[in-house]
Length: 44
Image 1 (tube, helix red, strand yellow):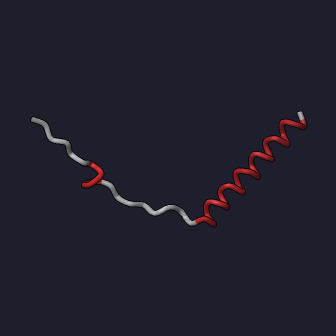
Image 2 (spheres, helix red, strand yellow):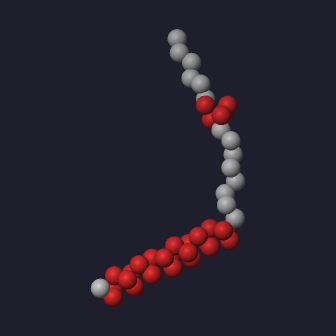
Image 3 (spheres, helix red, strand yellow):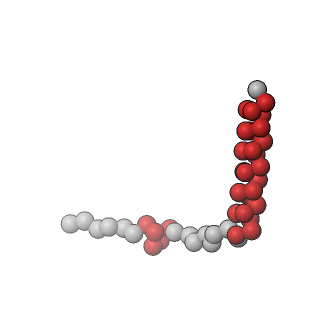
């Protein structure tokens, strides 16, 4: 006979998603970095 332990029930801790403004800022920073790297490639 077996028993299944639901680990989520006992150990899961909810973490709310980050605010939308913070995510947008991260995306803009990533986009800026990508464009900078592409600019370096084009110069070579």
